[in-house]
Amino acid sequence: MDGDHSPIPTRDELIQRARDLAPKLQERSKKACELRRLPDETIADFHRLGFFKVVQPKRYGGYEMDPSIIFDLQLELGRGCASSAWVYGVLNVHSWQLSLFSEEAQDEVWRENPRTLISSSYMPVAETEWVDGGVKLSGRWSFSSGCDFCEWAFLGGFVPTEEGKPPDMRTFLVPRSDYEIIDNWHVSGLRGSGSKDVVVDGAFIPDHRMHKFSDGFRQKSPGNEINPSPVYKYPFGQIHVRSVSTPAVGAAFGALDAYIDFMKTKVSQATGGKAKDSFTNSLVAAEATAALDREVLTLRRNFEEMFGYLEKGEKIPLDRRVHFRNDSARAVRVSTEVVEQLFVACGARAAFEDHPVNRHFQDIHAIRLHHANGPEGPAANLGGVLFGQSNSDFFI
Image 1 (tube, rainbow, N blue to C red):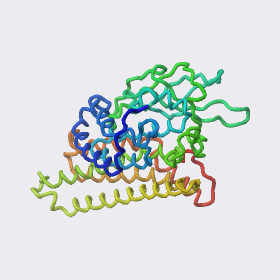
Image 2: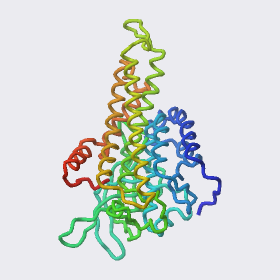
Image 3: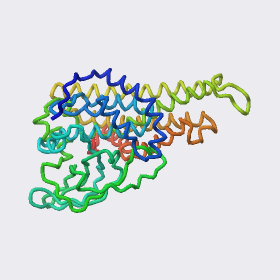
Image 4: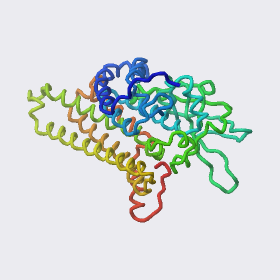
């Protein structure tokens, strides 16, 4: 167990730490792109500042805070570097999900070293075969963000069930000794996320190292017996989708910051006019500010509503979960549109790779490509539910 008994920082203290760190992350963003993963010092800072403890159970030295803190920290970190916010968020969601596993699995990962991190790829591509005491697992998974810093991985897939029943989707907890990392992360956006492929060839996964997606959906997982706090009663899908959508909002705020700084001193080479005197440029800044404020307020409202149900020991109504899922994807669409407008308003200089808005432009378009961030499916599902149809999204 963790021997660190220092006082738990407040939410505001953690947010201020992230705000103070963001300029350093911006300075390191070029190095992160060159490395195609986060610099070692960034992960060290996340540990030093307590960021990796926020949703970890107190029994392992964590802070056991409401997972909405991940959202708030990602917003600040993303202003400096979207890749840093992305890796930070997904690795913390894995700490939160591990708390839903059996006590035996949690002890395997954290008893000796509570600083241990877990990467993932939830793509359901596993080849599985039931064997005595568990399953035999093989496959190749893509997009395992932050995997270079992790000693375990969550990998997704289905397991066979009784004849006539649909396959059962699960998360498999796999130790580093049982998988190979394939360095194939050569991309245009989120280059610093190090989202490489992971390969497993016939590893044995015991029963206690599996988590049923259905348990996460029903908010009734094995880990809830030893971690009974409402913090661990959120539906898994609601936490996961926000970890990959919030970096887009953070990146949009970063692009807006860069746009404002750029426009304050820009002089048109074509007309000699000052960019800050332009009605159009001012309108772009105002509209971007308003649009992002609305998304943040909506996402915070959603967390507050969910926690209100959990605190009372009530289930979150399905129709509200569908609504929240749509809001998460919508935030990415709106943030992407904001950055596109800022990028164009900057003019030709934004095409250069070293322009700060360009970096956010590339990153946010990579974020938009994540399956969970596509706006069409969640919107169509919400509309269908509003019309009285059944929910079609299991990831809520």
